[in-house]
Length: 199
Image 1 (tube, rainbow, N blue to C red):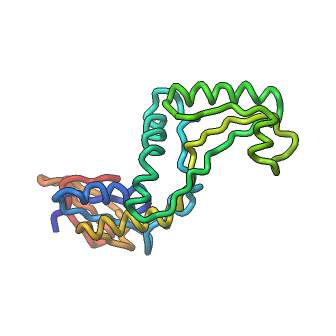
Image 2: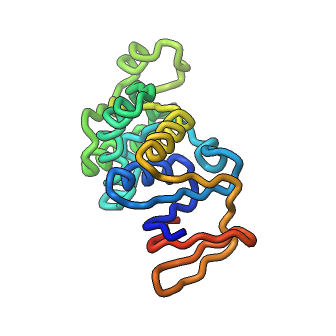
Image 3: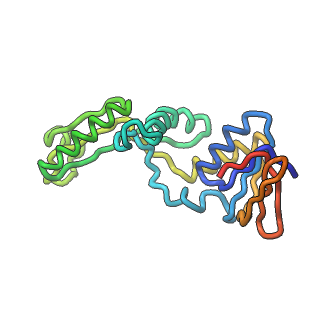
């Protein structure tokens, strides 16, 4: 069987790539070494949709954090996945930690994170009254959010499959060989061919 695209890994990233590609007239297969999706890195995900204030300025990570944060609410709505924009705090417990808070604030502004705010002790404790009294201030990023990585992964893979993508479980890639039409992926004695491979 010759596929247009083979995606190695059916975690949240592989599932979302498959979902996006499945919007086009492509023959797509996701191969996953585990017995189900979301069994690798995805299951250890913290569920945080990062605002983008901590990534190095000008880096791809910074760009994708901010763009991804802006896109995630709409994506979750389309996939029927719960999404909560609860904001995030980076809390300082010593006065000298506020210098680091200031640097994160400046970095976040340069990265394009919207709504960042430095909270003093009073404002922080108004927002989070149960926080330790030792907290002296914080960086507040209202665009920070959470989403269940399992639900997002299952919904993305399901949507890709609804659009015609295939999913092969218990299919660990053990070797890749290049041929005239693209690549052959091997899992033990089993194999498939694809013009393009995304790993």
